[in-house]
Amino acid sequence: MSRTVRTTALASTALALALVALATPSQAASTTGALMLTHVRPNAAGADTRDGTPLNLNGEYFVIKNVTTRAVNTGGYVPDITTNTYGRALPSYSLPAGAKAYVHTGSGRHYRDSSGAHHIYRGYARHVLLNTATAKNPDLRLKKPGSLDNNTSTGSISICNWNTAADGTTYAC
Image (cartoon, rainbow, N blue to C red; front, side, top):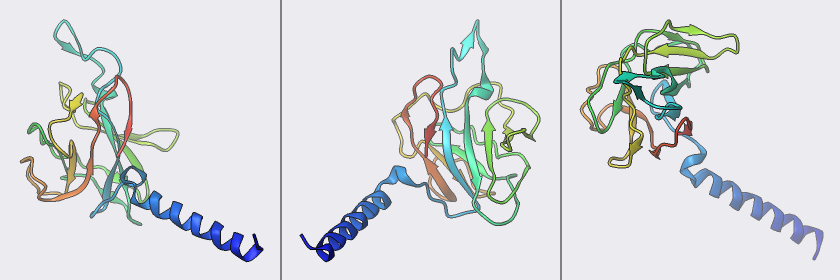
């Protein structure tokens, strides 16, 4: 085989692989807004309750990324879980350009940790992300500020699916 034919064959193979990678939904999340869902841990490690008391609420979270070149205030963005209406809008927090934030279900003080990760707390006293979320598609939507938590796609800027969640597993969106 000549060098030209081999080079052409290798280039064609590389292009085909690149096109397959781009077409694979799990390869890249998308957004139509300033924030994007990147990961979700819908099932915190261990038992959800003991003697009726919720456990490890902050082990349940999703991750958002600021995909702009400026700081974005997370206040008002609505996480819409498509099988319930726990639509508390995100609290106000200035997320720097390009930064990611863990949005925890429970309570805590919003902060940036020593590794540079941001943490935002929603203040729920119960788990809200479903462990078995196979009934609807998508399982979680992030909606622009002012949107309703009404289980519709109106206002959606980013989505995430996970199906049945293994204990303590984080899923890419």
